[in-house]
Length: 168
Image (cartoon, rainbow, N blue to C red; front, side):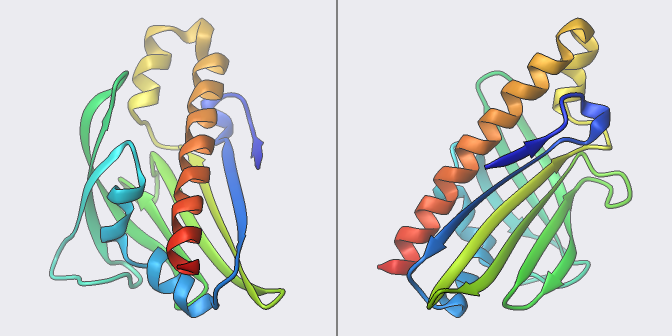
C-alpha cells in the first residue's frame, strides 16, 4: 500500500496491489464489470450505467449509490476518464475537470498471472469529506488520514474478492 498527502488540497492518493494467479483477460472481465462492485464493497450499494451505456468506454457515465455510517447515504455520477481495454479503467466522480475523487484499476501481465492495482485520489473538487473539514478545520489532517485508511482497507478487501473470483 502506498499513500501520499495529508491535506485535502494536496489531493492525497492511496494505491493497493495484488498478484492474481489468473490470466489478465479474466481479471479484466471482472474489474470492468461495475455491476459486481457493490457485492465487494461495504459502502457502494448499487451502480447503473447512464445514457444507454452498457459497459466502460471513454466518456461513458454511471451513477453510484453509497452508504457510510458517518456520512449517511449519497448518490454520485462518474465518468470514464481513462480507458485502455484489457489494461486501464479509470473514472472521475462528479465533474471530470474538478472531480471529488478519481479511481483507477490497472491490469498487467506478471509472472504467469496478473498484477492488479487499484488507485484513488481525493479531490480536487469538493466531497462529503470537505463538509466534515469545513466543520472541523483543525482536524483536517486526521479526517483525511482516517478516510484514506478506510479507502485502503476497502480497496484491499475489493482486490481480495477479485483475486478469489479470478482464481476460482
